[in-house]
Length: 402
Image (cartoon, rainbow, N blue to C red; front, side, top):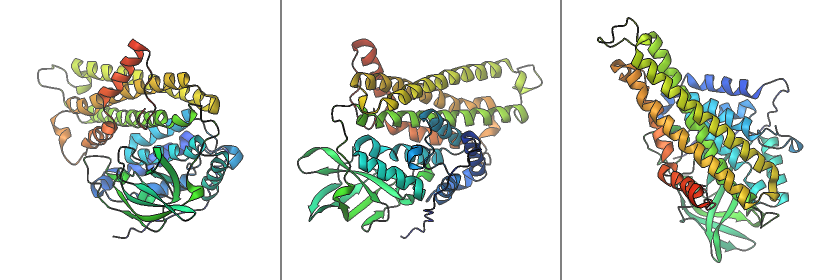
């Protein structure tokens, strides 16, 4: 099956007087009008990618020296959260793009980092991945002065609508996965249209088949400038924060939706002895509890993101101890954002009442999306990592999930 993709390669510079948060809210508002229809249709997120490309936000993390925005990770995570309030699939596509667009800076050579940064800004490139290090079926074989990639990768979020694709493959004689960057229209790549899931239906996170795909020697990333630095391993920590920001955005969107319904349509229970649902003491208590817990998760995530930004600014000088500290902070943020997110997206129906489950509202979308994405890696293991740090002072082992 052939998918028509509008690949807009023209650079879009943000006007100097445009606020990033304002732009993010504009995109979120635009997408919110069709969120439920697109979720029902599932399929390929062309509309979402076109909106992101038109926004000028794709070069957000590209340094200004390479014609990018040069934003901070605090600004980036705020934008991801705003998008997730309206459309968590679009937020995941964008959040992953931000992380992937800096991978050459983390694990590549200085020349590769400069080249990919410049390309992203000049050509308005959208990045996706075929990394999933738990799926080892993609292999690299020598081919003259380059390589050939063959096999399958699952969970290739957004790859079918991307411009650049970061991949991880097994390589004979290399104990670590080989990472490489290729154009997403390279011959031999086939999206298998097998993303049929409970939630996050518009992320196109299905599998890709690589049929003897050519990989040039210069497309293999690395080695990074300092092999002793912890900096190349910090990508997994950024991933935790992107997910936490998405979870918080979903939670905020769900709570706002629930509140509006409670204020305008919900009816008090007959034994409450009040005239309005907004005067029901149990309703007030529940909203107070959920709101307070949400503020705690937001504050924890902001603090962890601040630590991540500080670690990012250290660059190749980042120590493994410093990386461990920010990894634990990010794990705590993710744990809290999952817990409050699931609480809100579940309990919102108690607060709105029986009529709120009518399909015309589609309020189940918040829970379905959150429940799907929170299974990215088990919460119990995140809490175990935190406990091992608290009790034994042991930092989590660097990985795609930590």
